[in-house]
Length: 160
Image 1 (cartoon, rainbow, N blue to C red):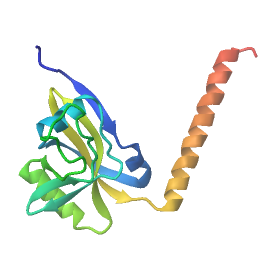
Image 2: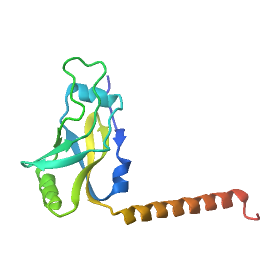
Image 3: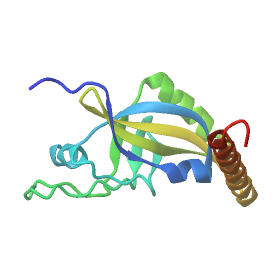
Image 4: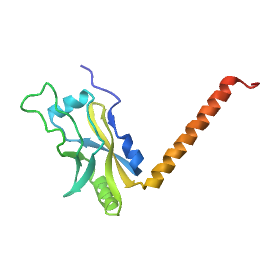
């Protein structure tokens, strides 16, 4: 069987972009068990409540839900277990320095397979205030209405 190529998205955390200002993103590998990989290959995972912590110079992904593999036996995994992230030492040091600042956290943004390996995209994020969220929604709505007006104008033609 040929090796997988490219990037296959499993889950994305769109809510993270709504709740946080994402300053920087990092790609990290995951330490997974066999049934977790099989469950991910079926495209089943949820990043909504997930976050990452740094303990003893290592980064761990917490509260990410990968459901049990339906064909699994007693070797099945726990759905919300803590999973270790694989990052370079310099990246971990940079994350430690940035998370010492008040108001910053590490959130998972996307979970995907890249060339056959499970990867997670994590973001260094600052929480948004309620008024920031409202402004972002208003800006998005204005852009959508502008795009709609331009599209209808181009459909009518130049002489209409």
